[in-house]
Length: 171
Image 1 (cartoon, rainbow, N blue to C red):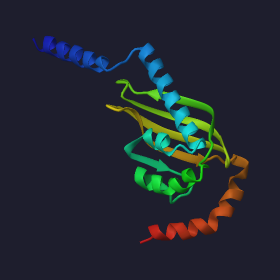
Image 2 (image 1 turned 90 degrees about the vertical axis):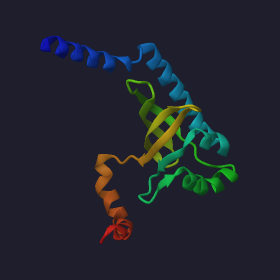
Image 3 (image 1 turned 90 degrees about the horizontal axis):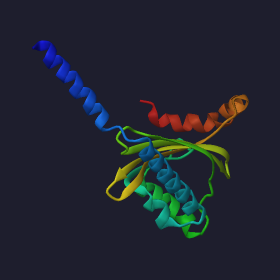
Image 4 (image 1 turned 135 degrees about the vertical axis):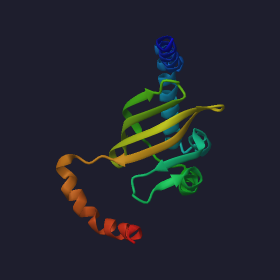
């Protein structure tokens, strides 16, 4: 009897785990949809379309920029960005490559992308969630890439500003 109960529980837990697995076709559709959303998001910035750009972001989104101080909630990022959009010139990021990953329930995706920007080659990464309003960007991180051979020069170049910035974390 105990073996039957144990076997039943094992089968139950295995079947519960597979309930959330989505099909390969659904995964491909999600990746295509998210790829389009991200392409349109970058396009909206290049066209200085404030509403379309921030419309892709969830109300509780976070945008982490290249400066150590840039860890913005959506409203803060909107306030920072609005003058650029109002002048008709935000930023123009061209995607060189992107990899999108889908969780087993198909409700979350995360991605990384290589970008050609005015800062040179950058890396973006983020998370989107499927909501009642469609897929929304929840979190985005923009990073400037540094060739390994140039790291020491960059460390030296930012040493002074890092020392000033880090003072706020000292107790």
